[in-house]
Length: 190
Image 1 (cartoon, rainbow, N blue to C red):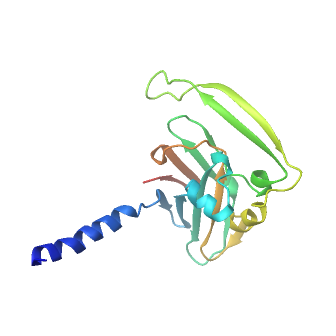
Image 2: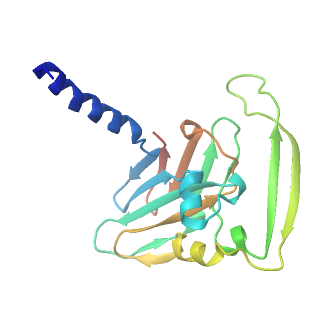
Image 3: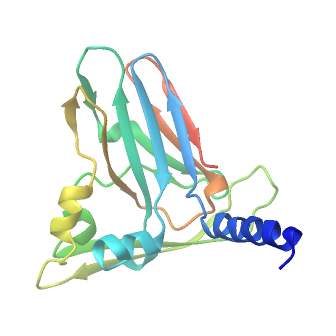
């Protein structure tokens, strides 16, 4: 091999390796009281952690809450709202693991029509509500209890998963709002 080929081979290999690593979409926001980082969790990551992707019924975020200053910080899950800018659909996270993988679960599926214009949300054409009733609790329940973000007072950074009842959306269409004691943070995903 000549010298130029020896130099080109490692550069090409490095480019291939870097191209293979795809960074998950992430958003960040902070104010004087807290810093919030949210990362979109893929169905593959859910299957690796829970042996299921929960039928792709949820948008799942791994959220890191880092309090600032020396005062304890109270995490309220109701302060999180995930919004789709394409459909206008929005909602807060499930508060307990049994809402996702309990013995019974309510599954809501919506079908959207076409937008009248770019600025208007797509109208809801139909809503299908189904009660999933299992005799045994989902085996993912215990793992969910350990990995979900919970309401508590913290003085150190904590992380956990938040499950939102939104159909899968493109990350660029999602906005996570978080109400702090002093402001409202707005995180977009890139």
